[in-house]
Length: 170
Image 1 (tube, rainbow, N blue to C red):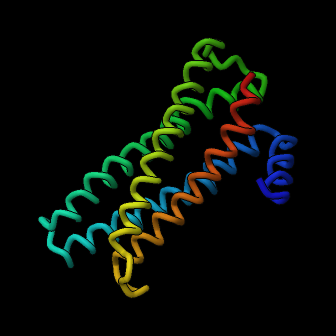
Image 2: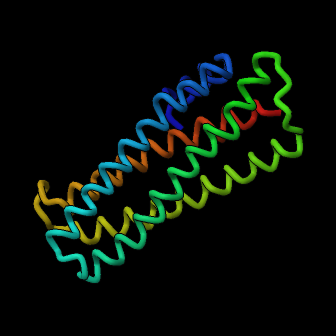
């Protein structure tokens, strides 16, 4: 981890939990959603150009579509189930969720992080192989670049949650 990343983690570790949650939703989740939309658009464009029944496009779609669906569900689960409970607790209210339930939720989200990062790696390898040797402005090369961007942003999301948010849950 670079010194800048360590400094950023230290800032978020000292920040109020509500500020961290607002940052996760307003910046990190939004970036992931924007990237997901771009990836899906580029996937559709590639399918049009290659033919929707082209084997590589079918395989790519079969990797990307479930990943996008699952990542959106993950983000929504955090926003609807976890973050409101944490913010209520931070504001001194009784969240109505026990410690065991919170541990279960944390475990589920950490498992999803691992699974989604693994899928992202598979997709990046596949798109990189498909885009190899193509011009930089080709839809497939743009799709590959979008996957790299999404991966970096999602990794930051995971880093903030796994190293800052989850440890603060107790």
